[in-house]
Length: 70
Image (cartoon, rainbow, N blue to C red):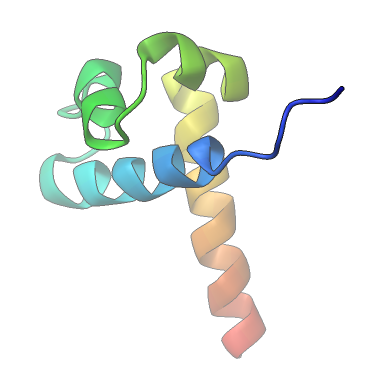
């Protein structure tokens, strides 16, 4: 039986957005993002292979919505 879908990826992205806005990418640790998302660092690495990949996904989401609004 497959595992039920989870909102962990979305929680990670929301936590990253808040941390990046408050402290910048360099000032945000994966540990603080994991704590804010109520998950582990291992789960961040499950969805995103690096902090750069997480940042790229975040930027892609933000700019995608911005372009959609234009």
